[in-house]
Image (tube, rainbow, N blue to C red; front, side, top):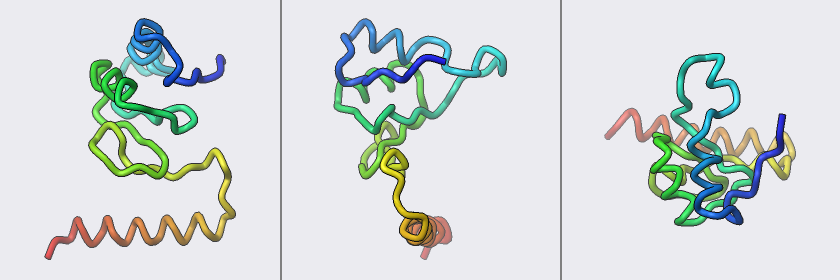
Length: 103
């Protein structure tokens, strides 16, 4: 398995190849990936546009709220202590459940 590249430093052509080519286990699943997590949480408008052009439905980025190409995600690269992660997950899950249940 090859390491993930830092997408923000790739040329436009390399970025297109990286996001547009077969991703991990896709060939064996015979299905495409609909969701991407930016490697290392790094992204910028050019990378988000390339993810959109590559056909991803949703993309996750740590600590960022935005459109469906920068959904909020937990940053596990820095390995938060388990208790704080569970508390943060509980708070976010509560907000999601309140939103889904409506007024």
